[in-house]
Image (tube, rainbow, N blue to C red; front, side, top):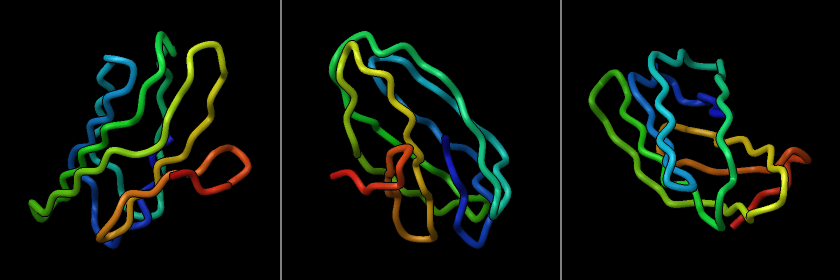
Length: 92
């Protein structure tokens, strides 16, 4: 799940995980969107965000392990991208 806690619209976001690319568009402030992927190997999230103003964020965060079911939230603020698991525990 990608959560927009920024003050402006996310024009485009790309999440790459396990060699799969997930794209999101037009995510309004205070809203979220979600997608699924298949955990095929150990991996991390490579998250790129472009706001409507043209401002960009890029961060490699979190991790997934083959054989485990994950439910992560990627939280986008005006200046950062953070991740939490289903229990809202922050991950490194």
